[in-house]
Each structure stands twice: as C-alpha cells, then as structure tokens.
Amino acid sequence: MKIILPDQSIQTLDRGSTPVENVLSDLGINSLEVIVSRNGKLVSEDTVVGADDEIRIIRIAHGG
Amino acid sequence: MCVEPAVIYLRYAKRHLCRAHLIEDIEQRVLSTVENKKLISTGDRIAVALSGGKDSTALLILLCRLLPALKDVSLVAITIDEGITSYREDTVHSAEDLTRRLGIEHHCISFTEQFGDPLDDLLKGRESQACSICGILRKKALNIGAHRVGATKLATGHNLDDEAQSVLMNVLRGDLPRLVRNSGNDSQSAFIQRIKPLAYISEKEIATYLILNDAWKNLPECPYTRYALRREVRTMLTTLEYRYPGTMLRLMESKRKIEYYCAGSMVCEPIRGCRECGDPCSGDICQVCLLRRSLGL
Image (cartoon, rainbow over all chains, first blue to last red; front, side, top):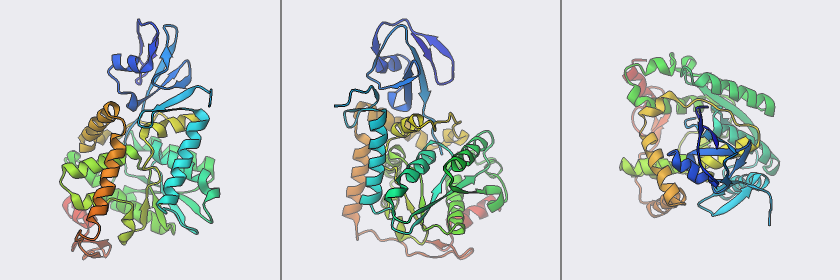
C-alpha cells in the first residue's frame, strides 16, 4: 500500500489487509498523534486497509 | 444504530463515531461544559484568544455555532502576534481569514507594540526560557486586548491534552497552589475571567472536527516548543493514554478531587496592586514587571 507521511514523503508498504493501527505501529507512530485518511476519506484506527489503498497520515501540530 | 463509516474511534469511551455524530457529539459536550460549569452568562461579551492554530480555530467555530443557545452573548476575537519568525505569520493570516469568513470582529496586538520588541529578539540567549517568558507576556497582552474590547470573559482553546499536561507538570514541579489555582475559578483573581470550553475535548477530536468542517490548515509548529518541559510531558502522556485509555480524564478527575479537598485550606497571597504598574498581583511586583527588569525593557 502507498503511504503518504506527514512530511509528504511517500513509502510503499508491502502488507496485506491490516488495521490502520498496525500500519502506524510499523511506522513507530502513536495513533493519538495523527489522523489517517484512506483514499481521501477519514478512517478510524481499527479500519482494515488493503494493499491497493492510499493512506495519508496527517500529524496534529502542537503549540498555539 | 448508525451505519455510516466511522471517522474516529474514541478509545477512552470505546465508541466509533461517523462524521455527523462526531460533530454533534463535540458540539453537545462543549455546550454541556459551558452550561454545567456556568462559563458563560447572559449578556457576556466573550473575547476568544485566537492564535489561528487548530484549538482556537475550533473554539471560535464552536462558539459561533453555540451562540443561538447562549442568550444575548457576543463574540470578539483577539490575536497576539508575538513575533515568531516562520511561525506566527501563517497563523495570523489564518485567524484573519477565519474571522472574515465568520463575520467576527477581530483585533490583533503585537509584542512589538506592547513590549517594544518581537519575541525572537527578547529571547536571544534565553531560548530555554521561551515558553515561560512568552506565557507571561502573552497573558498580559491578552488582558490588555480583552479590556480594550470591553470583554467580560476571555475564552482560550486549551483542550483535554493541554489540561492533563498542566496537571502533571504542576505535580512534577511540586506546585500545589498552581495546580489548584489553574482551575476554572480564575474569576477569583482581579483579571478578566478565563474560560476553557474545550477542556474535555481531546486534541485528536479537535483536529478531526476541523477536517470534517473544512477548516483544517497544515500550520507549522512553534519553533520554541523543543525547549519546553511540556513537550516531554506530552509525549509521555500520549503514550500512557494510548496504553491506558482514559488516563487524561482521570488526571483531570484527580485535579478536581484535590481542589475539593483543598477548598478552604489553601492560604493564598492576597491580590494587591503591583508597585510599578499597578496591575493586580500576589506579590509586591507583578511577573510582567519582574520580567521587564530582567530583560532590560
């Protein structure tokens, strides 16, 4: 699956169907610090994503 | 039973929510916080501290939507431009865009106007103290702004994560008076009462709310956060919240219980006028004047 990271760089993960939470865990990201979309739509962390999906990870910036 | 796809899983509540139900849930919880804690009264003029970042943006949007439920209440936004290069310019523009779009009166106050220099210059050689220096001056600037616009309350966008971090930081510093004083009963001070309507909404819920309302902007992070204790506490707490959902809410509950058991037994310094500027403070000289001295302003 294609992963667009918060810094806009792109990674390809060779993985079958798996929950978003596992994808984040593989990348060392805490799901509470990001928002994830699949093919342009927001999804919850237990949504199962597949090999053909495009996953975008948006980091929640801190500091007001 | 809703069949729409979930956009968020609230781990602490074990709930999946779709777009419409998340928006409804957040708006209802903010209204409940406002009503249960009596944060807003009839006739209030609320100054919203609008940095242009995600929390204050969400706060202004939420308060605008809740206005019909709040009798005879008006809103005005105040933005403080501290003068932080490559950071504040973007958020100030974002604040201007938002207030224009919502039709909210907007005032901007700069550190240069109030204190003679931008924060970047004031901090030269003192970067490790950035957050405490900025915090003291920003609080002063917000009070000036709130008085200037005739506000009766000052609303800030502090969210659940911020509040839980503050509880833990005050415990780590052994600062019980501040832990108790930081509560919603700021009205006891001579300053304009501060209110925090988002205190029970998590940072992730706020960010999701903004995306769902097409109000999310990818803004930079303040460059000075790397010096802050808060940054380390945030990482630690987020990890704990992930492993033990509800940790942040339980910290807030601990604070509430400490406030309850301390009620009446805490001896606070009486509020008096600063010897130099006359502003209300608990010592002889207020923090702003002490800071002005140390910065040579």
